[in-house]
Amino acid sequence: QSSIQEILAQLGIKSENPAYSTGVEWAKIGNRTQKTIYSPIDDEPIASVELATPQDYEMIIQKAQEAFKIWQKIPAPKRGEIVRQIGDKLRAYKEPLGKLVTYEMGKILQEGLGEVQEMIDICDFAVGLSRQLYGLTMHSERPMHRMYEQWHPLGVVGIISAFNFPVAVWSWNAMIAAVCGDVCVWKPSEKTPLTAIACQNIIADVLRANHLPEGVFSLILGDASIGELMSNDRRVPLVSATGSTRMGKKVGEAVAKRLGKSILELGGNNAIIITENANLEMAIRAVLFGAVGTAGQRCTTTRRLIVHEKVYEEIKNRLVKIYPNLPIGNPLDSKTLVGPLIDKDAVRNFQNALQKVQAEGGKLLVGGEVIEGKGNYVKPAIVEAENHYEMVQEETFAPILYLIKYQGNVENAIAIQNDVKQGLSSAIFTTNLIEAETFLSCAGSDCGIANVNIGTSGAEIGGAFGGEKETGGGRESGSDAWKAYMRRQTNTINYSTELPLAQGIKFDF
Ligand code: NAD
Image (cartoon, rainbow, N blue to C red; front, side, top):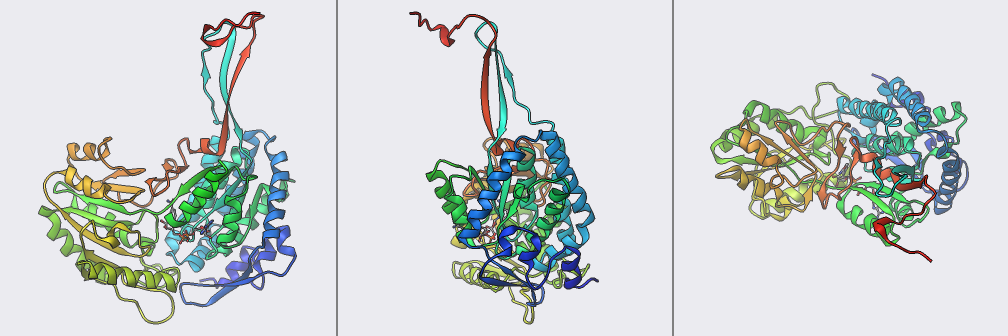
């Protein structure tokens, strides 16, 4: 087992002042606020970082703008080649980077490594995409005219990311934006700057080796105030922000005020429906991974379980029996399935939510205790509840599963599922075709992700990721999500010697 100091050294991070090790120019000057990062595993300090000032922000945006002038002119497949090299470097650093994700964020090592794998996968996807940024050709209504559309880069893309996927979400944005010809400025969560510095080191090496400016992928460490500068900055045509709905409303409003573009990936309140026709073995496994995996700190975590009355007691009894035996503890230990919460505030939010939901009438069936000692460990909880309770309507970023009973047909379960403000991920367990197709139909789930016989969490990068309603409406990652990172231009070319007007308009003089 390598120590955190060895891992930092492998990733080129100097523990006394990691911000310096990125080679980013802003880190080399000035008097800044220091922030010490503690591991949620054992409350021990890992390293201190310096937070950027508004002057630093200004310098970074200018460097990014300069880099854009160069990067946009590099042919897309050549940009893809740079992303391919980044993917190769990530393969080489998968082990230490995955471990650092675990040390800094607290997810179990399997998931830390999985997060780096997701970065590698999106690099591969982006390399292929770099040769497929297709536009359509249209038939002109005018003779000897040709009409087509092409996609151009936007410019500087601001990426604001959350603590729970400290590196993967950035890569979904950055690698796609890069092949599209954009340059990125990344403001990671102030809770997880070290993994961001490690990524910047990896990227900076590739850029240097290819004689490209580091401004193609910039990093800025800071709190919400830096995110606000970005949201209000006209030089940043697209802001892609991942985090809470509260944050997304602020960013969305600021960007909309200047008529910029935003991709908002916000909170979820995801449900699994288990019908009377479900394979219960599969359903239980999916519920466990969805509800307690990442200690309930995924945007796609299963927060509500909507179960048909005929199988309700069985599901309830089985889960209540399993929960006390969940291996909770150090996420670096291969037997652990539930690691710590990110910080003490998250532990308090967990306790408060449980208290409030019980005051509303919820019945705590199992779990809910805070484990004394070092680190932020809690016992995942199951609460019997009703969907309209205030706490059930909200996303508490912790492992609380609300158990809700439904009667009658699947439409009733779908109505309960859709009756929340958020619309990220949803799932149904059934072997009945009519139930499955009803769930997927236009009158079914209102979420951006709807799965059959698969849980709510653990999406693949190939699909477009994101959700509706207060989840923000953005889409990232696969499918044609790349289009949000480019501007579409419609081109009409006249190769005749006449000048016919569209719609047959005569305008002769
Ligand atoms: P958070 O909203 O506290 O912070 C997210 C990021 O936004 C941080 O970098 C933070 O500094 C920044 N920020 C906060 N206020 C800002 C403001 N006013 N202007 C600009 N930037 C601001 O979220 P968190 O606690 O880090 O992450 C958990 C949340 O993220 C959960 O709600 C979760 O569902 C959501 N999330 C969503 C997705 C998705 O794809 N839909 C993915 C991961 C996490």
